[in-house]
View 1 (cartoon, rainbow, N blue to C red):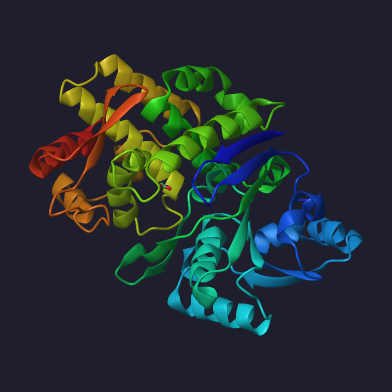
View 2 (tube, rainbow, N blue to C red; view 1 turned 90 degrees about the horizontal axis):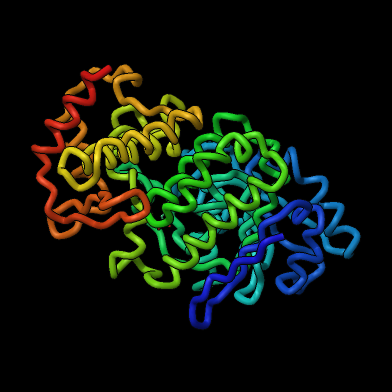
Length: 369
Ligand code: GLY
């Protein structure tokens, strides 16, 4: 098992990464169980696969599991979903000193985290991420939110969990496509800040994706270490350090918006394509060699992720995509920060990007191949 500390003054917590953590939940999370029951907010699929083992571990410790099921999918991150969840938590008598458990991917983690941020002005919560994406990204760092008709994650709060248990056994319950989508965020840590990790991933992608021996633990632990370091430096995304985690997300957001934020292009797939575009745009600006951008493309393609926007079959031009970018919540004083590359492993925030130049670049990409 790997244990990574997120060093935040007064709110430090551990991320534990390994097998069998959920089957031993009562022991692993003993410090955060103070009653004869706990409330578990669960993605319906995660509960189907993992609920029994969790309930058994708790029953052995004479703790009752009380479940709140959340339908899979972004639609659950709504005002209605939040109201239902907070009403249920209040009915269960959750107090400020209690911890609510979130079992599932980013949807359940974001929704539960936000509910816990506002329940009685804040109660504790424990993240039990079951998707690769949630294990390496959304369960760590305290960003919580719901969606509204105006956009994704526009209503939320920073609220750190007290513990994250990333059980690698849960990954074997995921469809391959979802695993690959999560892998995009793993690759992101290499591209943005750790060239050596990127090199390692070039050799170990298939081991990670086939959940082979120790590769997944190494990949998740190195990703979480990177995220923990960045979050400790810039918890509220004010200094620019945390903004680097948005590599691939500005281009990716535009692609998700154009494809309807759904199954046609999963978030991780959009991030993968967005990273390729950020690397190619960096090459076009003369910041990196084209061969470096090609390495990023190859790493994305080798993981079975989409690497060419022309493959999405979108009937739009570049200016439609840049218009989507203007609705991005990362807009700051009228400018849109782009994460670009000075090298693989050396990303930076550029506030001066000319959107008409980006639109022209996207026109070329839409027509290529
Ligand atoms: N997912 C980006 C962040 O946590 O900052």
